[in-house]
Image (cartoon, rainbow, N blue to C red):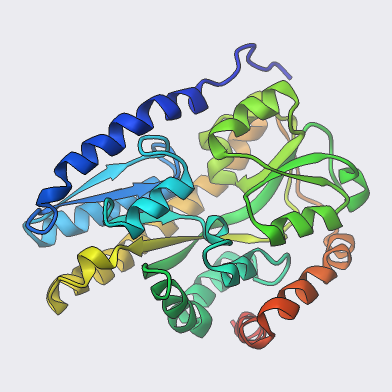
Length: 338
């Protein structure tokens, strides 16, 4: 495999832009109470799933109101933790990111990263996210306790693993340094697989793969395609262990001051954005595998999940010992009935 000889400059660019960008937001914050330009940040690049959602959301708001929405992509205002904090403080009005990054803030959100808990069949997953009581009733209350309003949780794609060597069983992951989000349950999962879980900021992942600081990482196919990971990884394995969700959160500093009609715009905008995103996820996943193979990656689809499922059984016990079994059983029941 030919890999670029230059270490990615994304993390450097992120640091240079962040201070200036946040400063510009703060300068305009005094007008927020009367402003009609709402600020929305996500943690991905142009054309990624969260970007598609953001611009569908923006389009709906601007077509159905006098307000505008300004979208900030990954790195423009910092890393995932930064944009979450800015939303809590009202600097941003909306944030779209993986709940994996809210594991410290909302520990229960780790449940979506318990391997083999959720279905991975696309239609079943869509039904689950639409109808799950845990997602639509329990989690809004948990986020509200942390000063955030959950507008929508939606599926972003099946998590897959890229590595520098082929993976077909947990034994193949022995001592592999696999990048994970800063999420205790994810770390436990890859530790159970035999790997060495290695949390790393997103802006440093490409360079880490390129220089051998890490041996692999997990993400949806859509993200792997958008970040050109075929340049620095040889293998992609469809282990079927997690279907990645994303969340859209609003700042109560904005929402609490709006009328019911105005608040309803956001719920309708989020619903319309999910429809646009679902079509894009399906297309990108279909075309993504072919694109990765065309660029030299070996895609492994025939992987027996049983050894992986057996290896991660302790993850269920870890979650229930800390947070009880009620939420886990609700999700299991709903997933089984979809």
